[in-house]
Length: 115
Image 1 (tube, rainbow, N blue to C red):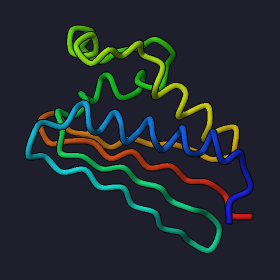
Image 2: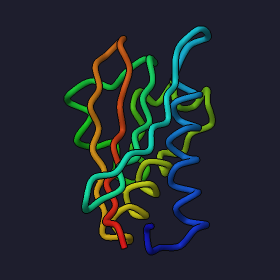
Image 3: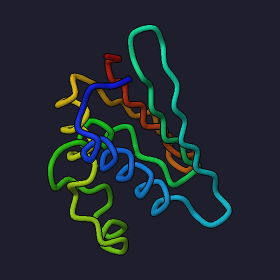
């Protein structure tokens, strides 16, 4: 059990899955994984999409920041999705991390404390 705002938690996961869909080419793979430890819930969204360069990974949670603006423009991104995801995770005393490699995909991991 997680103590939190159900609507916001749904929005957080939906934003990550939507991003994975937008940035994964046809035939790619997207996985949504829910796991837990003794102390926390772990939500992972993995994709085999375009990936994010290491230099940009530190900024992707900033408001209005878009990786390769031309690519984001094509999907209608305003650069707010990941900042919203991060804000929701932190509002629930959680954290978010990204592991990504260009051309191989990304894994976003959210950790939220259990009730």
